[in-house]
Amino acid sequence: MRAILVVNPQATSTTAGGRDVLAHALASQVKLDVVETDYRGHALAVARSAARDGFDLVVAHGGDGTVNEVVNGLLADSAGAPGRSGSVPMLGVVPGGSANVFARAAGLPADPVEATHQLLTALETERTRRIGLGLADGHWFTFNAGLGWDADVVGRVAKRRGKQTSASLYLRAAVRSYFRPPLGRPTLTVRIPGEEPAEAVTAFVSNTDPWTYLGERPVHLNSGCSFETGLGLFALNGLRLPTVFTHVRQALLTESDQHGRRLLRRDDVPLIRIDAAEPVNFQVDGDLVGQRTRVEFQSVPDALTVVG
Image (cartoon, rainbow, N blue to C red):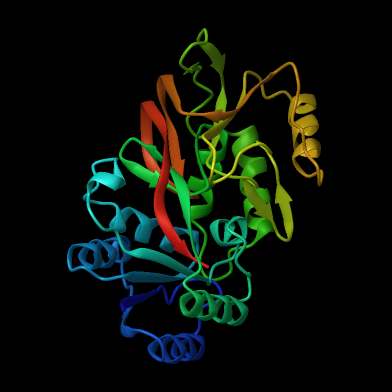
């Protein structure tokens, strides 16, 4: 088996020693190349080349941004339909970031050593699973995407984060973005096939549950969403403080079932289109993509094979 290990040395919990141990362990089972990323988009380029060169496996060692880049590289030639693009390398993940939302949602250990052991065992026993992904404006996402408040938060954090990214940094950014939204609160129009359009001021789209993690605590927006279902939609048509407090409290409950009169929530949706009256921030998997006035979110079942 030919494999590439893609390491982001700037990720929160990656170290040179950890990289060497992981590489040594993997090299005992596969023919391994190791690449350290040194610019934004590098992991995507490496994974795209691996897919074109017929590699069997690409292992991402970093945070959710690294995983997202690798996924987008693996599927760069799929034109939105992975099954039509021939063989796509399998994905392996050894968490190295601060939140590691995808890895934890996929049932992988947050500890890099434990995750390495699980990956090696899975390779030895050929244990894999097929997962569905989301596709939004040409960008694949593994766990969430959004327009409005959450994307504002992501943009604010991106200006300040480094090795010391923390839950408290996201909380501060959320509060500041709530009271001082960088682009205001343009009206969003949400369109779901078979339903009447609905208005919102912020919209979260999930590919799995939890939507994210606040430290060790999972945040649930669409508890009926998984890698085996369609997309989840969580959109609010108002952001007054009582509304926000209600849904934050529900999101942090262990068994969350979000509901409220300001909430438009759907689980297992194949397609969602959102139009904005003015440009709003747009994020995928916790990275700011830019500003958009229209985004179509599509569920793509069985898009990728994950080892583990």
